[in-house]
Structures are given as structure tokens and as C-alpha cells.
Amino acid sequence: MLFQIVDDLLDVLSTPELCHKPVRQDVPQGAYPMPVLLAYRPGVDLTEVAAADVYATARARGVAPAVATAYEWADRALAALDALPPSPARDRLRRLPVEYATTTLTERVAAPYEGLVRPSLRALP
Image 1 (tube, rainbow, N blue to C red):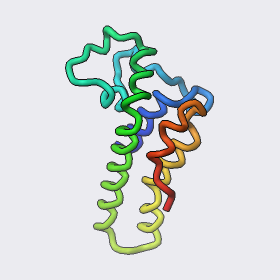
Image 2 (image 1 turned 135 degrees about the horizontal axis):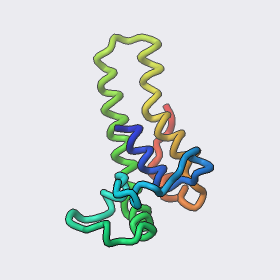
Image 3 (image 1 turned 180 degrees about the vertical axis):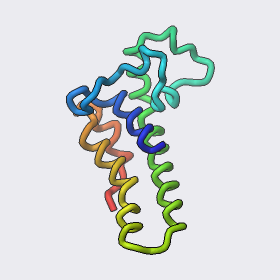
């Protein structure tokens, strides 16, 4: 889930050069990334809204809650690791969820949108 949410954020906030794949392709294809879903009230027919407007609204209202949701899933992954016995491998795995989300959102978000993400990022362990 964490990977998918971060991928959804990149569709809204990245560039093809930074992301190494096409971006802003989901909405025109009828697939709605998490920031879009969080930005709109249920019942809004997104097929009647121009894709550029959908992405702009997602950046304005959906990014912060999507980042928060990504970190909630990171916390769930960390909690799941508590079932494993203490070991160096478990310690390395404990860094992975937050490090993945924070590093990816730091390195692959386009400059104009960094300010939308930066306040929500967690410090790396």
C-alpha cells in the first residue's frame, strides 16, 4: 500500500524525467490516484472535470492527506515487524518504509510542488 500511495503522489507531483515514467496519465485513463480521491467529495463525477483541473485540485487539497496516509501504512509495516525476533535484519527492515517514502518524495517531486510535500515528510531514522 505504501508503494502504491507514493506512486499515486508521484503521478500528481512529479515529471517524467524525475519519475522515469509517464505522469499525469491516470486521470485521463479513468484511474484516480489517492490525492485525487482525497481531494474530492464522494459523488463528484470526475469524468466531467478537465484532467488539468483534477490534478490542480488534488495538489491543493489531496497531497497532505495522501502523504499522511502513506506514513500510516509505513507505521503499520513497522508494527508488523514487531512480531519478528530482534535481529540486525529486522533493524534494517525497520528503516525501509519511512526511508522509502521520505527519500522518494524528496527526490522525485518536481520543484514547484516540493512545498506541498516537505511539511509532511518524516525525518529518516
